Image (cartoon, rainbow, N blue to C red; front, side, top):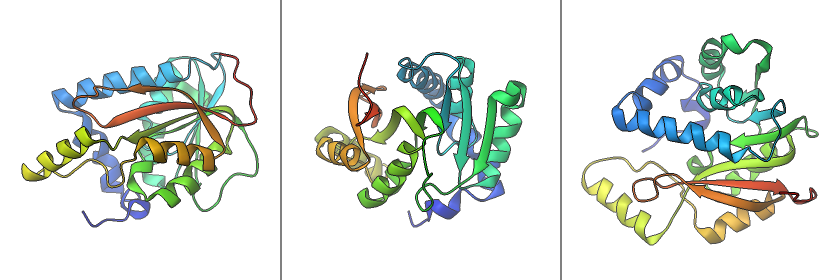
Length: 220
């Protein structure tokens, strides 16, 4: 697949069809339900009422789960079109959801502005060096907890990807990550792993890692 993730999602048409293309089928609906529940669980270290940075926010699908769990969410995304969909979707949450267009990979924040941060469904689009750039920017938004999502690279998952290619399906991740590189990614982004979760490990590559900034003590 020859495409530029920094430009692809800026399309109004892509933004409008994003959720329908991925989550309208029965398997997609099941995955959506389980992922939203798991993401909310990952932030159980934060008290309700705290503010979470969602970067990239996309169409607000995961921000919705955090808002429903009692958090405030500030979304960041490179795509104004995706944020437009998110604003429509989350309008009923009023001022508990805010957002802005931003490129955290190139213009990281000057200091933390949120209690926690979510970085989901983006890192696997970039090689490791750019993952470090992006995650460092996201971590800079948070005072403590950072939750990331990646696609795990293991012998079993490599077999699954070969099988999908043989069946004519496009692999879901361009740059899946090994356990060794997860450690490197977190360390270079100023984070340390607290715990991790797998979602449907036999049929999904997804791994969700709860991390803390290295200068923040772990109390739970």
